Length: 152
Ligand code: HEC
Image 1 (cartoon, rainbow, N blue to C red):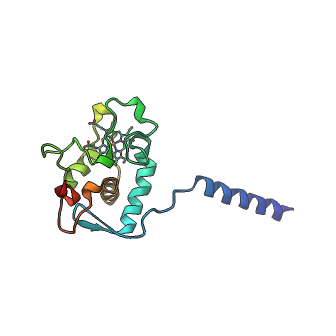
Image 2: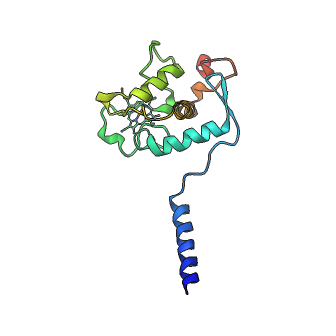
Image 3: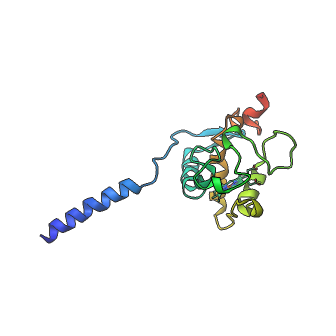
């Protein structure tokens, strides 16, 4: 009897873990983003962190329309369009990695973007890389820091 209870509990725990588990790792291949080849495991780490910490506002699809975004005005921008505001460059130029890292770590206090200063540097870097996967603007040849943006 005790064994059966244990077995039933085991099945329930397994079902629970499956139902609540992380989304499956999305990347099997490295990607060239902003001119740099990023390994699949870094992108998968970024995907997981993004799902846990960022998707509520920025949307699982990067659209800026996560469930919590309706409370924010202006809401987060659309990562799929590769539109960024927190950068020194004018116009529709893409931000640098340093600028992306800075806005993630420091947040934008008066606009509802939390500061993620508690994340490890490699996690912030993984997030920076993962965010780039939403827009074709970052995707271009190795060595071209502006990725596909130059072609537009
Ligand atoms: C509570 C909602 C919320 C969460 C959670 C959140 N953000 Fe944001 N984020 C925002 C808002 C709102 C803005 C736009 C701020 C502005 O308008 O200046 C923003 C802006 C940004 C920007 C700058 C975009 C630009 O235009 O330059 C980046 C990059 C970013 N977020 C990344 C992240 C990452 C990575 C995470 C998870 C670790 C995250 N955000 C979590 C709300 C959020």
